[in-house]
Length: 256
Image 1 (cartoon, rainbow, N blue to C red):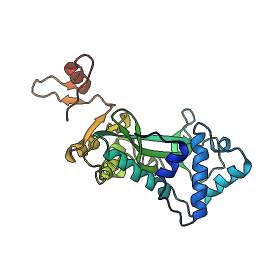
Image 2 (tube, helix red, strand yellow):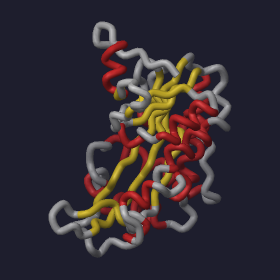
Image 3 (cartoon, rainbow, N blue to C red):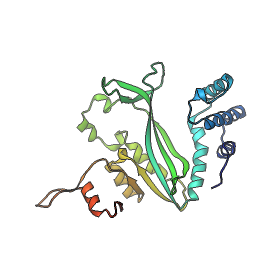
Image 4 (cartoon, one colour):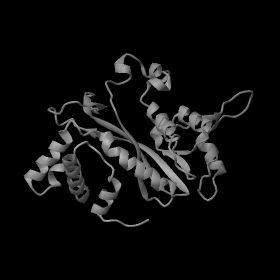
């Protein structure tokens, strides 16, 4: 894979971006360059002058600029890179951005509760699907969506057990299934796609649909489920116990 400078990568990745205004396109390249060169810093620390910082904020507040416009050309380039691989990992994860200490911020949803007071904390929840090569090289973002959480457990109307019995389509967990389903529509060539998730993705419906769609997957277990219910004198076995029994040299081979 050819190594590019920051400017070369930005110009190549977003060559077809279109805001309907050439001035916005030029500003986009300037803003992206500034943020890329200072990715470890916040926006205010990424620009040398107040003029450039103000221009950045004006760009993001412009009504003609939408996140989907920026993400779309990058997604297209990402899929091009995926097609060049033999095997690709599609990794899902959720990020939480807490703005609990900024009461003046607007248009925020609920992201969590304070550990002691149990008061809701406002912020943003972003679910992403990142493509990685077999060697761990990032290929790009395949999918990304914000989660608009208005309440917890159906706004407190349901108990935990009642909420668990809701159809998956009525839960936030549906996002894991939706991303797998949407990725099936992508033209990834002959690359083998392996879906990966952490413990938050340990959901029965996700296993069910991946098997139904014949999608390969690796999901970190969160629940030590019984895989052999006790009946007619048969001894119950847990999933963890079964994995340890088939482990060789501490390596697990998980077969669908």
